Amino acid sequence: MSESVYKEMWENLNLDIPAHDGLLEVLGKFYGDIYLSQQGRLKGAEYLDFVLSEVHGLRIKEIMDQKAQGKKVVGTFCVFVPEELTLAADAIQVGLCAGAEAGTEAAEALVPRNTCALIKSFVGFKLARICPFTESCDMIVGETTCDGKKKTYEAFGDLVNMHVMEVPQQKNATDRDMWKAEVLRYKDALEKLTGNTITTEKLRDAIRIVNEKRRALQRLNELRKATPAPISGRDALLINQISFYDDPVRFTRKINELCDELEARIAEKQGVAPEGTPRLMLSGCPMAVPNWKLPYIIESSGAVVVGEESCIGTRNSRDLVVDEGDSLESMLDAIADRYMKIDCACFTPNTEREDNVETMAKDLDVDGVIHYALMFCQPYAHEAFKIDKTLSEAGVPMLAIETDYSMEDVEQLKTRVEAFVEMIK
Image (cartoon, rainbow, N blue to C red; front, top):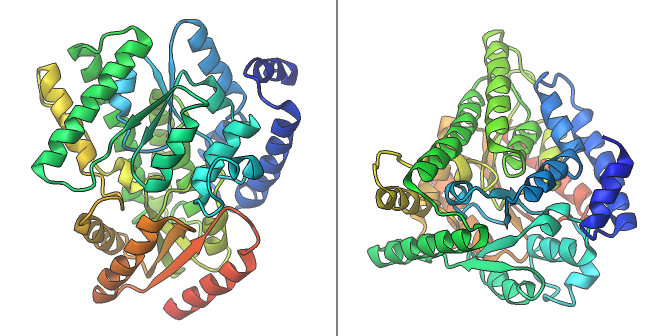
């Protein structure tokens, strides 16, 4: 499709065209340096490259065409928002831009300077008018997973149609009851937004679609246990990131095709790095597009990333909705139960996450774990101490890193990561 058609579409979305052009230019170069420079990539990675090249183009065109037919678009920042309900209301769910420094000066007029980069990013993208996903949304769903988000949504709600889901902080019976009420409140908000009733049949079909997407990601995670590592951590992270943007049925088909290629590569003992390359796991905060800094540093320091314990990783795909109910109420209960299994750092106590990190490290046979926290992200910074203790007792080395989206600390981080890799060799 021609650039002029896209520009007309972006203008209709009220994007700042010069600023958006500048973003795409930087993003293209960044992607080329980090992804296209890799050796021995899968043929299926062409799909990943195409999606990223068209993420603000063809994908937005698809969404706008569906909006013209009456569909509503729901934007999210978090894996607590039940995609099953969104699809059952015949709406489109997309992740929103929050992985790069954008509109920082304008954002810091709305939120404190010492706010985590992810929060400042989604505010900055909106104020700078450079995220077509945000501008295409009919409703944006926030969640109370941290104080920074909670307070930001108060101000953000003046800019967009905002729905905030209250996430409990514990996992007692009363907390589960409260969460079920929030699921029902979200269902009501969707039905009001779309004018569509969520029926038993629609919800059953939506559960199947989302479960199949998660099964494809589970299959990918299982294949990454192979030695030598058959896919780079960068490409695997990109797959997880794309899962929040692309059409879920198409995404599932493409990732299963890529997994078929992975299985053939594993059978031939082919890998992206030589056998014996240190295997590392990333754990902690989510990494939204285009936050690829740390995986790139790790994999250019003599190691390979074989797993991500994060919301852009196993926390999003580990559990399925148990689809055994024959009524709407039973399926709503199943959805509430599935999302309560998420081991976000907002919960206290959160021994589930400690157990999951240890189990995952053993299953992937990793040589070490890098715990990643965004600066000023208190929940994950606090949990780094507990995860370090758990892994230490299991005999797994861990390196804790706090950083943001800037490139100023790249050399410092590379020095620390290289020393860690050398230590675990």
